[in-house]
Amino acid sequence: MSRLALRASPRLDRDPVHGWPRPVRGRWRPFLFTRPALIAGAALALAGCASVSPQADRDAVQSALGPASPAALTGDARAQAVPDDASRAAVEALLREPLDAQAAVRIALLQSPRVQQAFATLQLSDAERARAATLPNPVFSFGRLREGRQLEIDRALGFDVLGLLTLPWQARWAGQRHEVARLEAAQQIAQVAADARRAWVRAVAAQQGVAYLRDARDAADTGAALAQRMAKAGNWSTLRRTREELLQADAAAQLARAEQAAVASREQLTRLLGLPQEQAASCRLPDRLPPLPVSLPERPEVQATALRERLDVRAAQAQLRATADAQGLTRATRFVDALEIGAVRNSTFANDAERGRSTERGVELSLPIPLFDWGQARSARAEALYLQSAARVRATAVQAASEAREAHAAWQNAWQVAHRYQAEVLPLRQKVNDEMLLRYNGMLASVWELLAEAQASALAVNAAMAAQRDFWLADTDLLLALTGASPAGLSALQGGGDGDAVATAGGSH
Image (cartoon, rainbow, N blue to C red):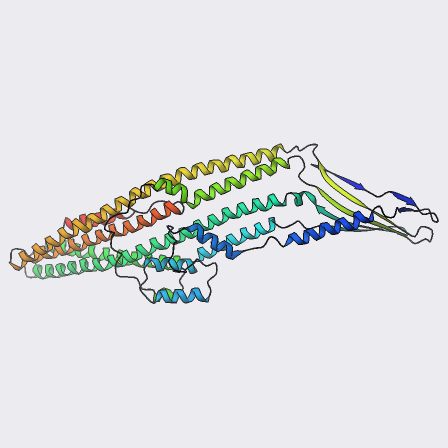
């Protein structure tokens, strides 16, 4: 828009002696000094209303996470923006005992770099909110012009009147955007907690799987040694000995892969928890995963819970409200988007005795003239942003409901598979082992059949542990899908096929 500057000067009179212009006394002083002083005083009084409040943000984020979130903690543990001495002491105390899932989440929230980054981003948003809620600074301009022996000094003090009038709306809009930032920070922290839980489950399961694969490798080593002795004595053919050696090599390869997976999963847990090398070396994991629950609790309203509690749905709704308010201000300031008023004082000095010094005082008002830009583009942009936010709310709600149903189904299926392993497969495998041992003691079964059964049992136990791991991963995914954000690809049944393949290979031996 074009900008028009209007200057309202006081009525001038003529000096009776020298003849130069002079202002009429008593007509401009009350406006030029009294009203600007009142405006400046009000500005100074309101300037301290907006301030940065990181502690309030941390409390709001902790409240937004809720008791059912993956980041829900017991006691007085809270996520920390910057680790302090108390948090470091708490981490050291947690590392003295075998690390369980709850302790892993606490350590991640206390010193994970991702949590610190989330709080730093939230602090930036809080600074933007405080700046938007602060009164605009007045503008002082000064000019010094010389023409020959004449000197002119211009002074002006201007205020952004439109910014002052729209300050309450700007503060409210900034607060709404900051509320969105809080919900987004809570999403990131919930994701960190869920990732820490998953990493802990994988690390413990990998460590537990290595122990059982070592038993299978030992059984294969024993079989290969006996096969070599039988072949050397001439009782076995080269084909049978080679088959036992092949089983030994395969068991050793599986153990090597499992050991590498255990190292990788442990290092992933170390990264998520933000542990330095010294603390990572002292971290001890439990020997096995927690037992399966006897039965699953009823969750009849998973879709309604996700639509009500999910942080990404709430953030999208808050963004829609903020965009709607922004559209209202755009419509209100469609034609005039700037308005400034200021006090002007110009002094002219002449070196000759006849003219001396003259002073002009007045008020300057500047505002744009809507000649070319009538605000259609800004209104169209505001409407498009609103439609975009509304579409994002609908898309987020559809995704949240679908992911909640999917996570709930995967959770139930993972429990059923793991429970079947615990209640049926392993007891039957143990019964077969006992019968085989009785047959061996009665000289009705050979040592090869006994070794083969031991290998198959170790692989079945490993498959059962994989199913148990998948259930706890599905449990974490369900918590995140109901209260946090998108699990970014459900991991409940990932890796379940490996355990089934291993069990099949063991049973076909």
